[in-house]
Amino acid sequence: MSSDSISIQPISSSTKSVAKKKVHIETWGCQMNVADSERMLSLLEANNYELTNSGPDNADLILLNTCHIREKARHKVLSRLGVLDQLKAQKPGLKIAVTGCVAQADGKKLVELAPQIDVLIGPGKIDELPRLLRERDITGESAVATGFDRHNEDIHQKVDDHQTLGDEPMIHIPSVTGKYEVNRFVNIIQGCNNFCTFCVVPFTRGREISRSMTEILQEVRYMVSQGAKEITLLGQNVNSYGLDLIGCDDVPEDGGPFVELLKAVAETPGVERLRFTTSNPHDFTKPLADLFASHPKLGLYMHLPVQAGHDRTLERMKRKVTIDQYMQRIEWLRASAPNIAISTDLIVGFPGETEEEFEATLRLLEKVRYSFVYAFKYSSRKGTAAARFLDQVSEDEKDRRLAKLNELQDKITLEHVLAAIGSVKDVLFIYNSKKDPRIWVGKTLDYRTVRVCSEANLAGKTLPVKLTSGNKIALIGELVQ
Ligand code: 5AD
Ligand code: SF4
Image 1 (cartoon, rainbow, N blue to C red):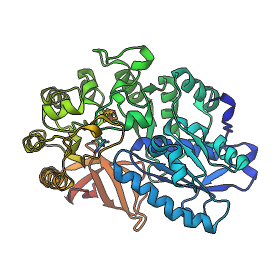
Image 2: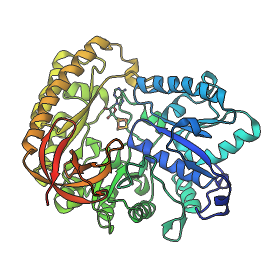
Image 3: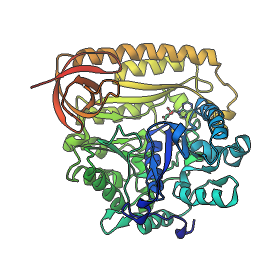
Image 4: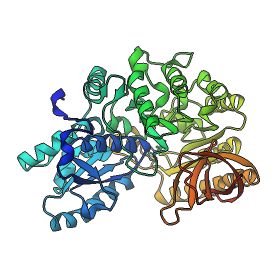
């Protein structure tokens, strides 16, 4: 990408006087996509757009930031494009941009299938959005950019040239959700080198490229200056942050650049809570677990995806850890922070998963007693190794396993919730309900959702709450006077 292809202007530029165009953004999938949507909105704002919250009907540009992790997500994009096509027929000039992992995976094929797409951009090319919109205007053809920059220097140069002025970011990094001004996401590493056999991410997001620590800390300071209290560092595999910068294949024994980064962010004035996701157990070190004892801002919550409870399945998934090694990481965490809540990701019905192997996953749930789990039916993704495995499990069987697993975990989650009732916990309040603005929603240090009723504006405040009731989704509480 040539460096003159983006024209980011400071927010106070002359573009302010021209009537702004409206962009409607729909973001699916993971928090990485939320961070990417924010970055794209930032670029659009510098190019005379503003976010509309009144739906797609009044928009000049509709941006679908898509997810490709499971098959259903892609069907959702295609059916959404069908609906938007009708809107486009009524509103000449309306543009549709498709970004994210479906854009990267399907590329031009998707444009052929859905010619209503004006601009299509993969996650590695989001900085090119303004240029592609202009290209679309000039040529009248759909504009497409997919793929990844090969050199780290390009990425860093790009941001240094265009995004920073002295020590602080020059452009506004807006929140796309409106809901999450209090907890903001900061991308620290793109892509993944792991190639777990079920996963499409290394194909849709490319290889690992870390951002420089200086740039990350600038962004954190910026988010704090905008009112953020909680920062979540994001990456497909945050534990391997910086290995590309220091030229290492494995995380050094002292925890390496990621541990260094966490300490620096935790010490940034104004950061009240610090979280990070997603961690791969393979790169999860003891010094990282130890930080939970020395750095209370990390809170009492850790998401550590295991995917399956049996070594044979893990090996075929190419997860590079055994259950014993995984349990060792849980022990490190619990030695560091005895009350830490742990959650995980699980896949049921991975090709060749036997009943016995599935039962081992159920036993793991009972052993770890996760705070909650995100469980998915295996979804075959074209191009991944597991898609070629012969012994695929039937959909009915996957349904049965998922239901059984969820039933067990619901019981465990409820037991955790019941144990918390009656206690007082510090809650960081994030947003209030649109329907009833007196209902405030926040998170405990151990990442439970808590709702309270209050006439006062609680956004961004951390207050003690007495927990009075709850279910597996949320706890209800009262502010302690
Ligand atoms: N099928 C089902 N679940 C998947 N995940 C990733 N790829 C697949 C797939 N092909 C799940 C994993 C991962 C989470 C983000 O999505 O559990 O941790
Ligand atoms: Fe996918 Fe595995 Fe990389 Fe996670 S670590 S993004 S599951 S390939």
